[in-house]
Length: 217
Image (cartoon, rainbow, N blue to C red; front, side):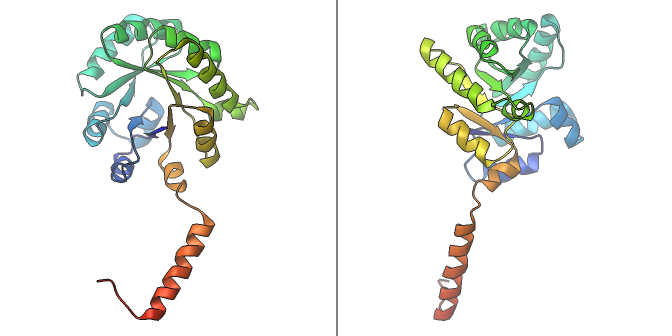
């Protein structure tokens, strides 16, 4: 499963990119607001950090305007994936852009039927929002499983990009359910490396090493 980092904070992206764990980045208007920086400037810097897909979201709601914004965003870098909402206008935009060979991330997916429409429109990625469904006491992971089954049934190439990831269990469950990608906040990615027994083992090893009085360097 590929990891995208879900943030507009370039410092966090650089740090995680140095680990080799990051395959791309997703952003949205809310994340850009949190960064406090110019939208295009942030996207351009992110595209320099990673060669993977960088999702940049349009803000228009009508197809003609979405396409105009998309063309402006595509000028920033070759690894831009245009993010559009899962609406009829968004799907029209998706079809037009994919026909031109551009990557498209269809976002705000909350049902298997929506995911089916996105795949038929040629989406590169479909972004089902796990955490937001869980907030409504709906099993977000069941949606991932349903989409996986439908896509496999018909050979759709659209990648399932699990979004609204809240914790380490979400990451594991998405991997088990067959998501192609998970877009994850930086803190959650870092937390995947943590385990109490790992810490305990390191502590024991260091204590034993200290008793030898030796040094590798």
